[in-house]
Amino acid sequence: MIMLTTMAIPATSMAESGSDDPSSPASSSVQGRAGTDEAAGAGSEADAPVSLLPLFAWLTPSFPVGAYAYSHTLEWAVEAGDIRDEESLGTFLGDLLALGFGRSDAILAAHAHRAAAVGDETALAEVNALAVALAPSAELRLETCQQGRSFLDAVRAAWLAPGLDAAAAALVGEVAYPVAVGLAAGVHGLPLAPTLEAFLLATVQNLVSAAVRLAPIGQTAGTRVVARLAPGVRALALEIPTLTLDDLGSATFRADLGSFRHETQYTRLFRS
Image (cartoon, helix red, strand yellow):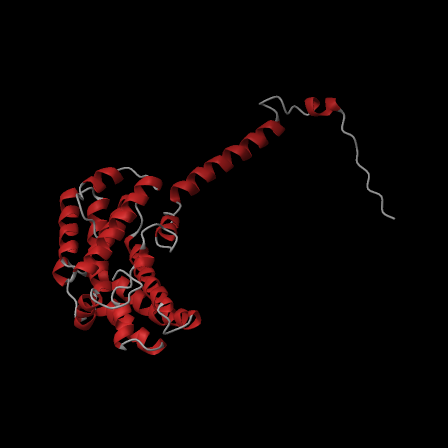
């Protein structure tokens, strides 16, 4: 059997060591280590990259923007037979991403981000007015504006930042969702590149979630669709910062027309 013993240290030994004396070697070494640790901590904090945690919180299904209520024409596409399986869903969403509202919304988010970052409230209001006007139908306008206002209200309630209220006050009335996301990220000092990647990927995930609820595919197939579209998300996010508002435009006419058809669809699970 192994027995462990401890040695009692006399109470006077600490005083005799000179630890209470600032000039003693023991005290100097302790103070020196503490000073070094504090300086290193301060330096590392100052040099640390901006945390992306706000993006993780804002662009998850649990953030209260009401994204679950909208399908962005997918419900009509399923009804019309355009989306039948995993392959057709991937193709449909790929077009929406590269040729439709995904690209346009990312451009608008980028310009809102830049305007909010420098406190240009006039430019921010102009970008928002353009974003709202570009909605091709009443349902899609409702989709972007309801989510945009809900997003901005939630951020202002929980994720405070200098200049946030002033920037939000510049947007009177309807607020487009991509503009709200760009505004919040810009005010919080979040880098543009990861903001665009996260925003576009969240857009894809929301639409895949709607497709799963509409039942042409299962959850595993939906996961494969997200993975399939991820490289396109990355490529588009890299391209967006080089584009201007003159590059706005889309070529997803069937999806746009589908948003009008959805208004009179006999049975509906979604608001768009």
